[in-house]
Length: 456
Image (cartoon, rainbow, N blue to C red; front, side):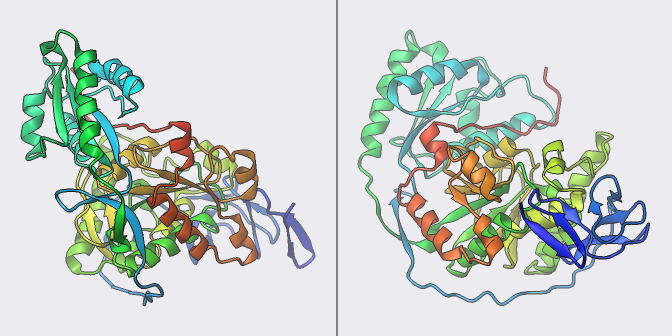
């Protein structure tokens, strides 16, 4: 039990829940992280439990923003840091050398799974690629293109059916150019034995992938996705700030990080806007936020229908509180770019990526943006894994102990004043060098594609 003494009042904060450190009058803002997380709906007295029963969000619809840049001096403490990666023929770098099966349509999911079980390749079932309208097929194609082009895959089999809207010939136009030694195609309706043909192709891809060996690569080539899920009251105190320091450290070394989950920026977006490196980037952030609010409005949904039941049980009261904790994963670096859903990372530094907060969708989104691995903080725990290594960071020790089969790194020691930045950065380099994460050991890797239109 973690006891916090408030004058003569003792409260148990081991659950991650909040208790008032002073009296708060009805209608006054409730402050955390130096910003309002909502307002009091009744008088709150020192030592009282502060949660959904006495606090309500301040969030509303689209608002006006102004550009007032505020930058931080991020010092470069490390020089000449490296990892051992696979340098591809096009100059891109991977941290894995796997064979991936990417199917153009959900109808061949089981075929892909059978080929994967026979060959050791990885496949990522999904239900789309046909009967999609309203831009959904284009979204599906962008996601699949991002997977095909991902440098963690040493070889890729694009598996189609034949009659789908996103058939191989159509998808090739979206894919653009490709290395025919690395990317091969199989249309199941054209084959008398798609399993035998698929195994043969995958063996050819394995032979090509075997020509690559790990070599020394500067850490500036490393690209990391930033994600949280199953958050709790400690997320914004332990794991997320730790990931933020990692982000700053990598960016200072010339590397790249990507922050997504736009709805979990609501209420904290002003802090990101202050760090936009230019007015152009600021305008992109404003559009990112307002467009997602419009998406909610068009579907007759309120923008603050968050946090989730699990978040609330873990001590998070309002979306502002969740967002203020969430964006800490982005550290204090400048925001250099804003990417749309399905876009690929092009600039070194911290970028924002359009997309929802749903764990599987967001992890897929980050993967398709080209990140080598994902830092995934969690206070409640989840076994979820992306196609890329997904490092689970526990916000509290109880979770790290209970679900050690899911958790890769325990950030709870930061509560005692321990700086785990160097230790965690070293661990990330180990993963880049080939150390398997728990999702890889467990064989948990999956995708989910964002859908907003009509299905025929």
